[in-house]
Length: 188
Image (tube, rainbow, N blue to C red; front, side):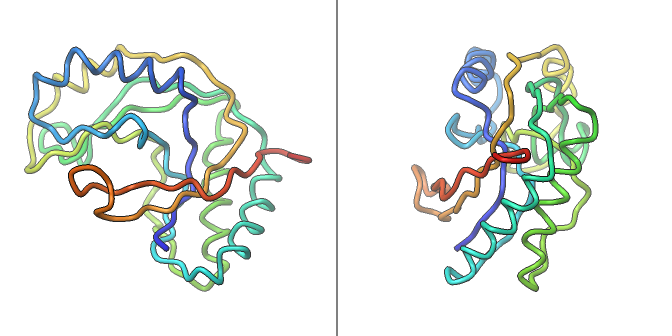
């Protein structure tokens, strides 16, 4: 199973962001993310054998229990690798308490590494992927537009363990399957 751990914004936050983008999407021929796929990846595990799933869930529970629930909101934006030659357009995330999301992501990565697996170790940059571009493009205007966006605040109290089934969704995109909600904080 191809797995990742993520924060999934609640429906009202997704709807707010989707409404903000809806009137603007036709201005660019990007491959826009479906609203039901909007999330903040905390750790990407790649292919995990099904028999290791229970171990991963337990390790994620331990890691999440050490953290504190967060006040979060989608705000701002950017592009990977940069706005002058973007391949990905994204929205940012504001969280309180500061630094807690980084520690949660580190714990989620460590949980996956405990299975003697290489976990994607790129620098963590909390973001929600909004669109992918077929070839590098200049998107500074889009980044400026996103810089003015601030969605509604929500309380991030769970980590989602998600299976991504490549090519099984509409237009051969991935289909995401929620496997587990894991509470954040002691006693969650």
